[in-house]
Image (cartoon, rainbow, N blue to C red; front, side):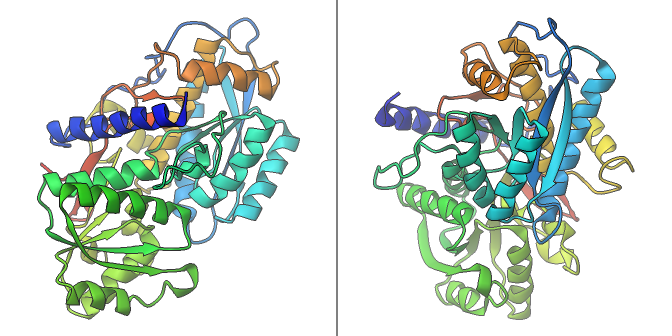
Length: 422
């Protein structure tokens, strides 16, 4: 597919899932994930049986540990469910801590190769994911990232000027929304729901994730007629004092602040806004998930915060309730409530199972041969997946590596995530 054709198709996909979600009010509960992930194609790995070796990488210590631990637990729940159900497709997972550091993530990847990894679920955060997928692409190890949302994780995506800096990594696919999808969807949602007229943006200018969402949000906001009155930034070394950014938003008359960043700096921004007596509407993306778990943070300050997410733990469908109950048990999250990263990782395992069954690969095959088969299976016309993070609809993948699925608008009320339109 040419880059021009790919971009045209992506434009349709992105707008389609957002328009469809808006048409549903983005308030439908998640539904329809069976324990067997049984919405896929035919075929079987029964000829050999055995266990596939899954490697996974993410931060389970350090400032982003909530994401890595969520992915580790969510994936393990799915693996354990599959084992309990029996069958010819089984998994063993080796999870490596990268502390949200790209160099450590590559080292972890090499450790997993030495272990005999055949499939990679990861990495969890975008900057390490960009580095690791460069390696997994060279080795042709099939990679499904639950939360590496940067377009550089999958490659092949043009920038605002139409240039492609990172070639397509044909072995890499996303379970999460890509950064452009998140930025575009956020601007569309803010516009369609009339949430704000004067928008301030605070973003991190040394982070691939934050910049990617920012750029697409700005472009879509212009098309939607949203007025951006303030754009301020920070870096890894300056994410302790947000007085300049907040003062700029206030003096510019902003009524909504868009935060395409992770939850730790968001907690500081909300705290410092309260100290300065500033009251804005706050709108974030998947990086906001985890805000309620920040140690020492006054969670009352999160009341009314809005975000787009593919999963909410308060949904009433049976699949979500079962997942939340298992996650909160002592075997996994030990009382913690699962976030969307946990749910995306859970779905990753079932997608792999379904793709393996569709492709007919077996554990005695080497990683490259497995990858070649799964790359074809996951983009086949008859392959789709309905799970925890697909809002009751069938998700599909394009050969760009991106997923097409529905987001939901959420708001924090009484300390929990609730559908924004409920």
